[in-house]
Amino acid sequence: MARKRGTGSGGTPATAALTAAGTWFELHPYEHDPRAQSYGDEAATALGVDPSRVLKTIVVDADGELCVGVVPVAGTLDLKAVAAALGARRARLAEVAAAERTTGYVVGGISPVGQKRALRTVVDASALDHATVLVSGGRRGLDIELRPADLVAATGAVVAPVARG
Image (cartoon, rainbow, N blue to C red; front, side):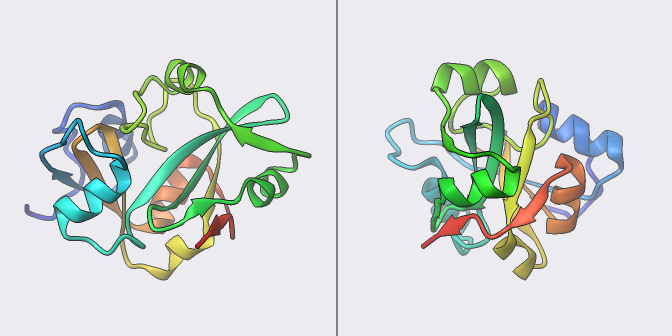
């Protein structure tokens, strides 16, 4: 796939938001297997990308406010660390229905970009170790490659060490 500034092709709110911001991104579609146990691992394998560069989007409830943690698929989200980064006392995984309703995406396709209601976001500091990272493009079977700094800018994220493993 040719490297380009976003053109909005792919037709998701994430691609539209990046295009509107003039942010460079590259689309990486792949064949989604509905039987996949882990959407992030599936993407990394299907695309032949190091799992430390593929980031998963996890919606959390931080003291009653829905927020987002973005961590490598090779690890897990440290709920205590994400709570601290958000200035909350406690964070827990959000209910699936609430996450989908609030972001406008389905689980396995929740993008940190272009959410129906932009949620406060924390991106794991390890993302900055890479020239580019991949995040969900807003549907299962589509990832977006972009620069970590552009991901942080597009989401207004805080960067903190919030991943384990």
